[in-house]
Image (cartoon, rainbow, N blue to C red; front, side):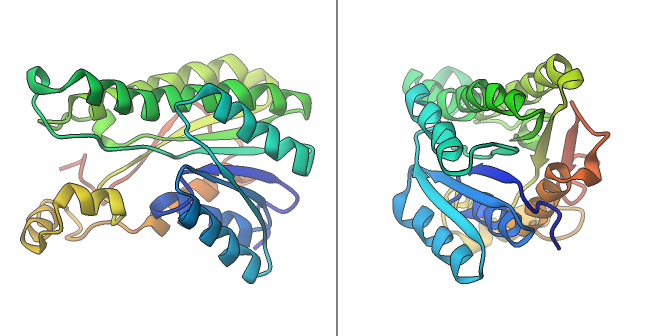
Amino acid sequence: MGKLSGRVAIVTGAASGIGRASARLFAAEGASVVAADWEVRGGEAVVAEIRAAGGEASFVKVDVSNAEDVRRMVQAAIERHARLDVLFNNAGVEGEQAFTADCTLENWDRVIGVNLRGMFLGMKYAIPEMLKSGGGVIINNASVAGIVGFQGMPAYCASKGGIIQLTKVAALEYAKQNIRVNVICPGVISTPMVDRFLGGSEETRKAFEALEPVGHFGEPEDVARLALFLASDDSAFCTGAPFIVDGGFVAA
């Protein structure tokens, strides 16, 4: 307990799934959490859960693809806590499934805007504040879809691959200024996003689970625990690296 005591952490996409699990775990480990999401009800609910458990949290509504929203999100953390130590750039969307030639421009722009532009904007506005206080930690959430290809998901795969490269660039740029930047690459995790992808079909779920070497999907808490490791001093010598949490999917 207490691995993040005294630290201030922003978690985007905090209303559900991996973001929600991470916000709760960060708070349980002592962080003051700024939970950010476009979905107000879920975001306020996770804040209420954290406070009920004795933690410190606040909610900020944000569209991570909007520069002004992201700037206000970071500023809200500074105004409330006077510093920013951790940014978990977690928010993302899956978009529509279609082969490359059939992928609409609207779908491409939305997925790239949220998934890749959103990561860039988070770092753009968080890094200057971290530099003021002597350093910090940034964790970007990508996917195994940034490492291997999935048919019918050109925008999603491109965005996740871009996140991995963006992470490496920022890690090199700020390594000597005590800002560590790493990227998590989850496999199939039981989240609302995956539920949408599977279309609510139990048969489809079982078919996908059969492809997992461990025989089942991961849980949001599996990713949250990795995020905690990267946010804490336990990973002090880790920067610029992709961390895969996929039950062996990529190894198969």
